[in-house]
Image (cartoon, rainbow over all chains, first blue to last red; front, side, top):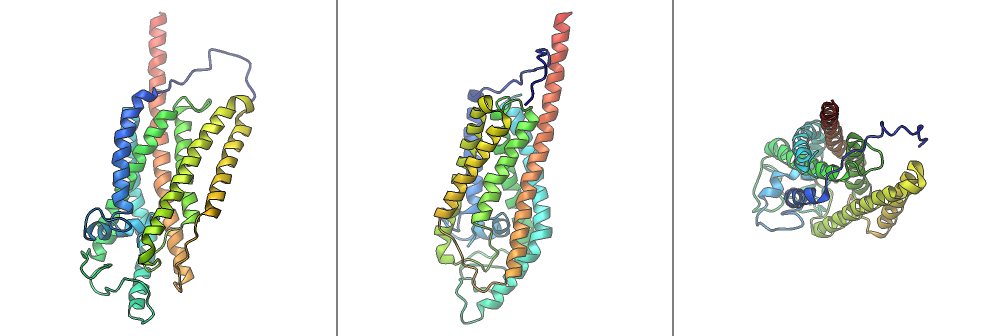
Length: 71
Length: 262
């Protein structure tokens, strides 16, 4: 908080990444990640997009230990 | 520093974090899952059993016609699948959020802002939801309420994460006028108020019944350790890689500036 005596040479601006450059990555990867988390956490538990219990059974222990409501 | 560079690092770190999470979950958590399933199967033969788990034979199924995955596969390959998937997903998300915050969080270096994002992520996505809706072992939880419980859980996660994002933006906005101490205090304070009020208003789930308290605590402790492992591995790994990337880029820029000045 205490500003050192002004020495402009040492204050290096950290370049930021333009949000427009991040947006397509964020949108595409965000959709993928949400889909993956959905199948890991809720499919064939609270929701059933696919019939059966194979996905639920396969990720059963992960669902419990990662804190998602399983059954 | 580009979005691509950070996402690649986030995915790499997420994969390793997922593997670390699997090892910890297997070692720390699985013994208590086994205990809970043994209790469940013992209870399934008792007349007062009020849950739907009634297969005492191969594996652990919920319906008579359900696909059976052996316990061995559930606690090894199944758990590994889940850990790697959640590691990759969260590693990538943390990396992209970090990419957006580089150079936008006060005077923080890229490594520092990445570490801050990982810490905020752990608290808002894992720790606070766990305090309201803690993980439950097999045998705890009524199959009829899974829809409502899942809805409440994700609603609370959403409230917590959105509140964390807004409070971080609030602190960032206040930083110039108030300074670091007051701005961080205001942001954290606002977050605590929001999640406390939301936690008070949202329904409480108690379907523990006569499940032994010690096994429940061991399981929940193991679950929290598993989540902490995941986030710590992502946070530490990504902070290290982003810090190294920043140092390398800074050195390159300085060399170019020096060369240009000659």
